[in-house]
Image 1: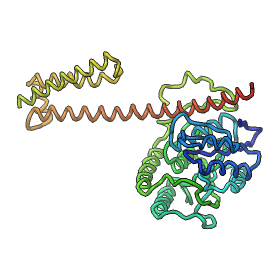
Image 2: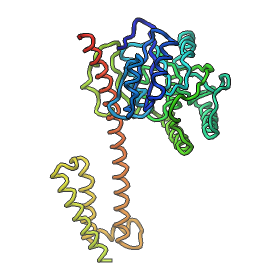
Image 3: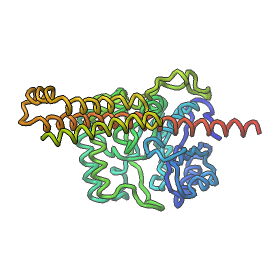
Image 4: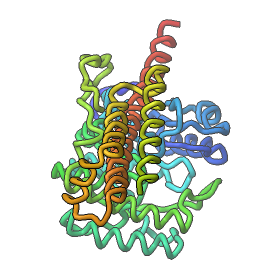
Length: 262
Length: 117
């Protein structure tokens, strides 16, 4: 089981949905890269043996009672980390594409700069990462669109290799986009004048499974994210807002008094 | 034209019957049935009371009365469909929050049990 041991504690979270081909290796390589750091696998109701393999590899597990999608899955992890008192959370994808040896660099940047989010940027790395032209076009488009909204250029807004600090955790545990969350999460943070940094990271070939984004889904993705971004720019808190729950291992108080609309 | 209005009367009576039967069997909650009941009653009244329907037609500037009746019906359906989407969105938000809370509580319960054991 996981507990934040002292200030500055780091938790690595791995959202996973049917990743039995890679999850064991991912958990072991994270543990090897950052010994002593707890790894939490959030299982988004996989139908394969992801959960068992993750536990077997030594990860703490957070199985969801039904499939929520990536955003809901991540938010569950962020909320648990916040309530357990973690200071930093780094997300690593369950398909093995992120190199866990980069985790210490992300953590150092979070600590040194005090910024709320550090993104492991895939594009400015050593060039090992290649992607299809539809997705490249999509990323280019979002970079262009996000620049005026964020007030600065962003190199890889769709990267899932992301580290956040406790201030961001407090925000994400209350409101977090549900589908394709990476870009919208940036806008959620920007609305609170939070800062983010990017560092180039190596990308490894996917160990198993296929990307969830096919060409047709990429188009849906673009429309969905565009809408989500503009909703966020206008006002995000109107939906998906929850009152904060006290952190540090205390059971949630005032739970019954929460408003009906969550 | 009169036959069309008779059909509208029949449809509104069937709708009224279905809504009331669903209410009785608790297939629909009272708060969601009110709009349907009002829509059914409005359709019934307009299809039976020709004078009122003609007044509505004149107000909308339409060429004939049944058209006015069915346009009004379509407008009500649009509002109801949108309201359903709003309700579903709230339910989904609540459902996600509940699922996350269940997962977190289960995690902490396992933690407590392992400490006690």
